[in-house]
Image (cartoon, rainbow, N blue to C red; front, side, top):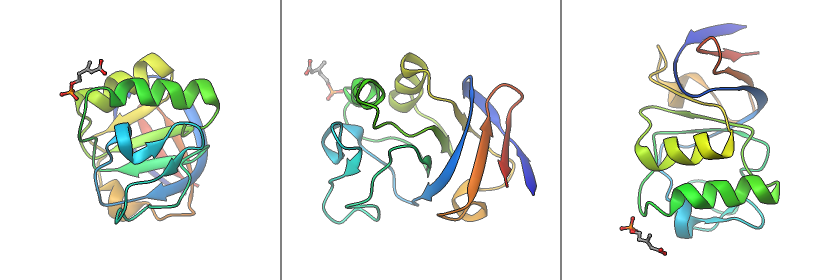
Length: 133
Ligand SMILES: C/C(=C\C(=O)O)CCOP(=O)(O)O
């Protein structure tokens, strides 16, 4: 098991299978809130579902309405269980906080390369760590 220190953005603790992308995510327009599927054409994760995953990505992009899309995902039961950003920006940070989704950033090692899709990961945004189980 590998334990990496991380900065807490949205408190909580959750685990799941990792889904990793090196590309930023625009939640408004690029994610279907009904299904949790990435619908942005050409995106690395196009066609894949973020539901129940530990979603690892550099950060958000696009419209500020993305925060509310994250909230919709949560209400629809299609949200990721937790998120890890390289550097969280306000869209994803606010979305995670209002949706009660654990979010960390500034991980001691780059999470995009340290975490692999399919790894089982625990995001502990109470103590500030990422555990690759
Ligand atoms: C709040 C907005 C639109 C709406 O109510 O649907 C404006 C969002 O502005 P962005 O420049 O897309 O963040």
